[in-house]
Structures are given as C-alpha cells and as structure tokens.
Length: 502
Image 1 (cartoon, rainbow, N blue to C red):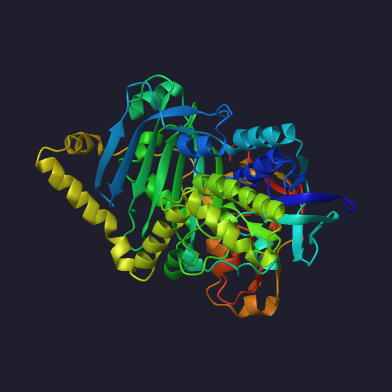
Image 2 (tube, rainbow, N blue to C red):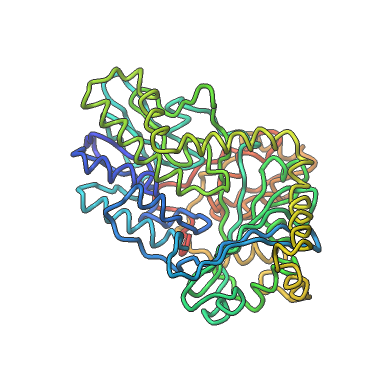
C-alpha cells in the first residue's frame, strides 16, 4: 500500500466490517477493507450460532452462508456442582430460526460478497494507528499508510482504531468476559442420538452457572455437522480476583457429570480463546464516532446480553453505513457524526440491545454474590415447576446424571500442550514484551504463569521469559499483570495463530 485512497477504509474483515463494507459499496462508495490475517476468518472465533432474524435484516437479498446445522432445539441449562435443571423449546414444524456455523467459512462468504460489489480486501496488514485529521483519515499499517474520507474500526475488542482515534479507552476488566471454546469431533449419528435430534438438525444449549460457586460464569454447547462446540466464559475481573485461569474453568465445566456425557469419546480438534466486551457503553452519553472515524461490532464496547456478537455486528454495520451515507449526501458537519450514528443505531434496534445489556451489567457487576447464586435460584425455580407438573425434564436429568469420562485433553497442562501441538501458526517473535524485567523478578505471585491460556510466559531464574510465538491473540495479557508490565499487541500482519474453525 503506497498512499492509495478510498472513500472509506474498514479496519477488520469480520462480520461487522464486511457488513459495513457491503452496504457502503451498495451506495457507490469505494471501500478498502484491511485485514491482519492472510484471509478473512483465520484470526476470528465465536461461539457459533447465527440467528436468521439479524442476518436477514442486514442482507435481505442474500442466500444463507455455509452453515453446519439448522437449530430445532434451544435449551438453557442451570447448573451447580452436582445439580442440573433445564428448560427448552423443540421445533418440529420444519421451520428454523438459527443455524450453527464456523467463522472459517462464514467470513470468506461475506468477503466474497463485498468483492462482488467492488470492495478491495487488503490482507496481511496490521493497523498500528488511526489519525483523525481535518480533511482525511490516515491509517498507518505495518505495510505503509493509506488515507480515506472516513474510517470504520471493526477491529474487535482490542480495537486499535478506538484507542488511537481517542473514541474510547481500553475496556476495563470488569466489562470483559474471557471465553474458551473447544471444537470436539463426534460422528453425526452420535450427536443426533445424544441430543435427541432429527437427522441433520441441531441444538443450542446455553449454560448458566458453574461447578465452582466462587466464579459466576457459564458456557455453551452447540452442535455442528461432525463436531460440537463446547465453550466456557466468565468475567475477567472474577478470574483475576480468584486466581483461576480460563482453561481451569473450562475443564471444571467439562467434568460436570451431566455435561461430560455429551462429549464422552470425542476428539478435540481446536481450542481457542476470546475476549468479549460487555456493557462498556454510556446510556446517557453514547460515543461511538468522532468526526471521520466510527466504530462497529465488538470495537464499540459491548456484546448482546447473551454475549452474542453477530447481532451487534450486523446492526452496527448497517447503521454506520447509513450514517456515513447521510453525512456525505447532506454535507452534515462532522462534529455531529456521533449523533447521526446513534440515530440509526436506535432505528435499527441496536440501542435497545445495548440498553438491556448495560442494565444487566450494572446490576451484577457490583453484586458478585447475586450473580454467583443466580443459577441456584433458577434451578430451584425449575424444580418447583416440575413438582407442579409444568415440565417433565427433571426425572430425565436424574437418570442421565451418571459418571462418565470426558475425553482428551484433561488438565490445564494437557490443554496447553494440545494448543501448542495442534494449532497452525506462522511463527513470529518480538511483538510481546516486558516494560521492566526487574519488576517480574520481584513479583511474588507471577499470575502470568497460570492465567495465560497459551503459556506465553515461563519462569527462569526468578524472572519471566516471553514465548510470544505461542500467543493465541486474545489480549488477556492486557489485564492479569498487577503491575501492567506486559506490552502486548497483535503480531505483524499475516503472522501468528491460524484458526481452522473459528
């Protein structure tokens, strides 16, 4: 890239960025999409469920992207260490409202639709800084500089666009969840038998609660064609407070006697980690744009209330495209960019999602005990309904609560070894550093040794050695060091971890 100009530069070729690009291209804008991976989808992960309502709202004219299974069962599991209750809905009338999918197929699908509209996707390029100037925006990457009239930062929770353009600061740890996702191979026949599914159909299970009462959290189980996605999540601040790593939390959930029965005999294919923003927005003074620079998707600072990101990605992408179009067509003063953007966010229903998420965050953030005991309360409620004859699930669950053995990998050490031996990478060093190695030598607890999912940090002679080629690129390093002594950034464009499923 040598100074090539666009009307709009979109940073990040994920769902939010590609939705934005698609709609701007439809309005005649020239759009460049900068992606740090070698292709869209190889750097991104998500739980794996897409609700069709939001996809069709963003892309009413497009066919569905490649997906795994049509969802006929949605269930909620409420768990403690030895107890589980659930409520759910089964749909057999042939209609479906959600599908499971992988980012490795979904993102390239959207990217191709943007290319068909004339979009240019610039891969292997890491954005280092975004400079909001009077007459243009400069985007500085590790391959050069490019300029545009507008920039949309759709570069995720660790958004360089958001911080360098001074739209928001780094998201605080109490507004973040860390999630671990494991893709586990099972045959289609086993999946359908264990989940009670029709041939080719799927299930979505949301898990509320955790076997360890001290950590409020939850998880999910989603069915794919020949695998299931098993995930765990908890607030970053809680994990740091209690000194429990995300991998340990994940293993505890997998060993729950009922949940273990779903994955018994399966083969682990991939383990990934991801930070999810939650409620880092202002209800009174929302701020998602500054003159020529806008934010979309996770970069805005919040997922939906159920921690899903695709609704935010689709609705914000449509909204920011409308805002930029109106600003250019009507010649609106750039000082009103944020106001115009928020107007369209409200019209598209995204503001209602943000508002509800923020309220939940405010209630539970400062009342950990309430959140920790939430699943106990729900289990009691479901059990009471069962005793009144309103559900028939409790007897079935009691029968299935038997000892089963979960498959490989077992402990945190095993998971780390699996991660390092099974993930594809383009190795590179030097993008993670320590501000002052002497601080690490004096640190007594050294939480980096346990908290990092990728085992980037190891101890040698009382100090810390950085093995940055093992980084999973989740950004958790920005939070668990009590001295803020870690200098973390993404690896150079095209380098680092490659997710096969995502």
